[in-house]
Each structure stands twice: as structure tokens, then as C-alpha cells.
Length: 279
Image (cartoon, rainbow, N blue to C red):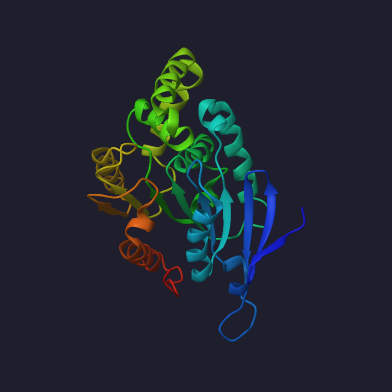
């Protein structure tokens, strides 16, 4: 598909059905007007939440465009979650894209929302199985950000499906999903448990940032604090931003100043370009 311009200075390249590259041409120049080296230009790997609307994702993209990033958006589908084998296949395809000639030398930042973190974990499963093959990739990842990570029991995952995809039938979806997970336990629960183990023992040891809140039914705040502490014991730098009251995958909308301030400090810590403007 031929690229089309969506806003001034940003061009869209559709790589596949669920993978889209946003080329930020305004960030391709140094302050002197001289073209900046492409290899040094940071790339954001964004993994949105299920059911995310384009205008909502665009708000986050705009933040990173102003920061000088290109953005690679990798969307998730329910099928990839319900049948994890497909999710692993999808993860392998995303890894191929990240290691293609176009991106192979770019420093990476990961920003995953809700179940998007599950999709990213499918990449990590492949990385954990061949750390030597993907060593350069993990070294290119300068930081990883998790916004409203679905954290906790299998029941929380089932609740998440209902709330994000079929909110009018949330109760039925939750119980139907639980029956499905256990009926196909070897093809679902076993894969989920492996993915959770890989995430806890994350092969990416770059600094991490967690956004979460106390009243999110899809995210166990105690579990978030436990994984933060576990990662710190592994020697990782972890930043937490927690609110007493907020909205799942809606922290930017509810608390814009705190959200952006935390992100700006994190990017400065990573020695990536600071935010040039607020939303």
C-alpha cells in the first residue's frame, strides 16, 4: 500500500493488517536544518489496548512525534489472546519487522497498554528461547513502559475481555472465557503461565516505567508492586506512577499533567529527547 500523509510531516506506511509505521519526517532534521542520521533516530514500539480507537492512539503518537520519535504501532486481536499459539506466531512476525533492514539499527522504546503488554510478552518468549540470537535487539531497547498492565489471575484476564470487547455482555463473556480457558487448558493456561514467567524474568533489563491505579479491576496493584520489587532485586531501574483513582488505559485523560511529567522525566533519564511540548 502506498503511504499517505495523515498530518503535517507524518507519513503512514502500512506494513501489514495490524502493523503500521508512522514516519515522523519533521524529526529528520537537526536544528541546523541538516538531515539527522537515521540510524540514531529513536523508534517507539507502541502496543495499544484492545478496542482502542484511532483518535485515542493518535494522542499518544503525537506526544512521541513531538519528542522526535518515529512510531511503529502493533495492534492486538482477541484471537491472539484466546489461542496463544497464534499470539506466538504474531510475536515472531513482529520480531522479524524489528530486525528488518529498515529498523535493525534503531534504538527502541516500548510503550505497551493493557493487553498490549501480553502481545509484547509473546515477543519476549521467543527472545528468552534464543537470547544469543536476539541479544542485539534487547540491547537496542532503551526502556519499556507499561500502562494499565493486566496483572493478576486468569479471572482478571477474562474480565478484561468482557470490559474491553463486549461490555454489554461482560458477565457472560467472563464466565464463557473461564470455561474456554479450562476446557483448552493445555493450549491456553499452560501458555499463559509460561508467558507470565517470562515477563517476571524479563530478558529486557532496560529501565522500566509502570502506570497503574488502585481502583483498576483489571490490574492488581499489589502484584504491580511485587513485580517492581522483583525487578529491582534483579538490578533493574523501575519507576512507578500510581493513582488512587483513575481509569484503565485512561490515565493520560484523567491525569494529563502528572502522566506527561512522569514520562518526560523517564525519557530524560534514558537520555532520549525531552518532550518539546505538552498536549
